[in-house]
Length: 241
Ligand SMILES: Nc1ncnc2c1ncn2[C@@H]1O[C@H](COP(=O)(O)OP(=O)(O)OP(=O)(O)O)[C@@H](O)[C@H]1O
Ligand SMILES: [Mg+2]
Image (cartoon, rainbow, N blue to C red; front, side, top):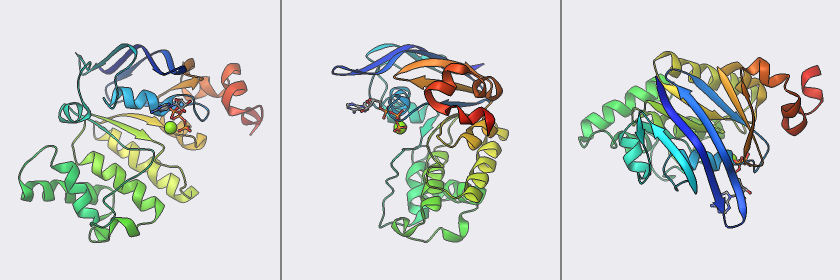
């Protein structure tokens, strides 16, 4: 089953063609990667999918239903959650509080929200820092908190926007393991990432954006040896490395 269908989506900002005629299907249980140079339109595409702003043209279908007119909170209630490239937790509040904010998307009961939040923190191995102030966390833990907040909404589809940027190599490996674990528990994941080692290890399929257009789509192996991708993004050294 297709969890997400992106059909000929365009998004313009004035004269800037941020996304141009982009189509992609995301199958249930898949991890699909989205890569491309800075400014290629990756986050813009996520924003269109998540209902932050509507596409200029084209159609997005989530779990069989067109999303036109739906706002982020509508989509969240239907099972779509996303992280933000720029993380912005409630800095003065605790980790647990921040994750409960996500959980309240699915329940109005405080005790239930707390239970769900703790469950997620357990899964991400964050229980020991549940009482820490979010503003005091390391980058790695702030990224993890961002995922936790999204997971607490209990999504079917999770959009991850550069959750590994700024992490050390061992932290990247940990994040890869966490994301694979989420998929193994039945979630579908659409992920933007610049760290090639991570995106190659994670993805079943990868789409490549360049100046708003999809220039390639395929398995990690296919993408790694695609001439256009090497030219536009990976660089000549990548294949040799
Ligand atoms: N809200 C906005 N208003 C105007 N222009 C925007 C807006 N959001 C994005 N853009 C422009 O759209 C283009 C694509 O930006 P986007 O943030 O989607 O790229 P990206 O692929 O996520 O890049 P990065 O890898 O640096 O995060 C850029 O030219 C950007 O300046
Ligand atoms: Mg971006």
